[in-house]
Amino acid sequence: MAYSKEDVKRVVDEFQAKRKRVWDERDAHVAEIRTMLPAAYELETEINRAGPRMYEAALRGEGEAAFEKIKEKTVENTEKLRALLKENGYPENYLDVNYECALCSDTGYCGIEMCSCMKEALAKAGFESSGLSNLARTQSFETFDLSFYEGRDRERIAKNVQLLRDFAENFDSKIGCNWLLFGATGLGKTHLSTSVAATVINSGHSVVYESVGQVISVYEEKRFGGNYASERDRKYTECELLIIDDLGTEVTNQFTISCLYSLINERIVKNLSTIINTNLGQGEIRERYTDRIASRLFGEYMPLGFSGRDVRQQKIERQFG
Ligand SMILES: [Zn+2]
Image (cartoon, rainbow, N blue to C red; front, side, top):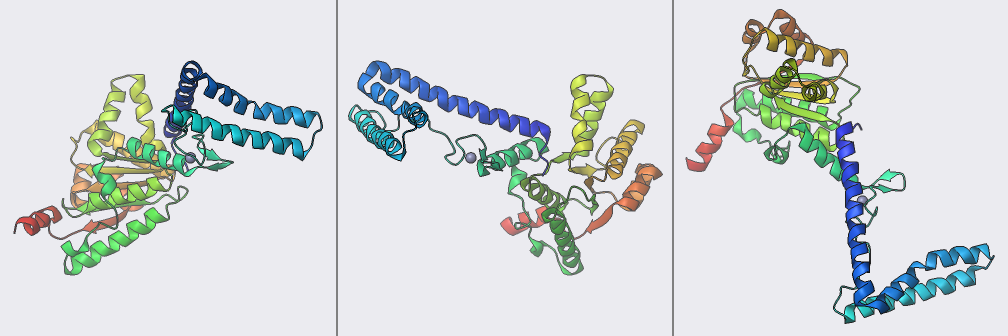
């Protein structure tokens, strides 16, 4: 588990704001009742005194009987208060603190265990900061349809699915695994890599999913100055899984090649996992990028080939054919 620091900060801030919001709302209700329904306000004040009364009783050395009496009185007062509120057209729980999560009272923790609501919020934050589109959230290994592939293509793709699924479901940030997904467009590379991303994010790891063009533009911003930009490129070298989509679609020049080389190299040195999708073949990769990059990709990445007929085209045919 390693949520990114930024995501954790954002979620913790959200939870604090949420708690403040429900308490502010409750305080406003109490203030309103104080003017509009003084009898209810008195009951509420009485209920709130139960805690201090118990404490005083304990200090005086009074026993169980005294505690029971205070508890009984509080239950009675609470019932009276609810009835009174209802009679006067207010919701029964108008003076309660209405937390969104009853399990953790919006603290995000149940004892020392993280509450399921906070885990969910962190996964959501992970999706938002990963760069994955909303659409991609619906893509999963389950929705990957092998019936679009035939014969040897199907065997090959089925093997790719199995390998990537194993990798995603048993993701270990201490074991660097690199995958090069190559083949023509429309053969499922994006679908499979977003499925990997979603699975890994849901198990609490930091993932960045971006096209090569987006990655390069961040490095370009950095090159032309700006502190903001210098922070933004850190995610590429720090996230536990980086997925670079569409390698080969960017404008290639010395600058972009050197950015890509240092990024690919740094992640290998740090033992961090990376997936690269490309429409280029081996020869094209060698030709387009330097030998340094080619030898990294062919030496350190597991190549997974994608073949068959364009799935998007087939979907259109199935729908209209
Ligand atoms: Zn909770």
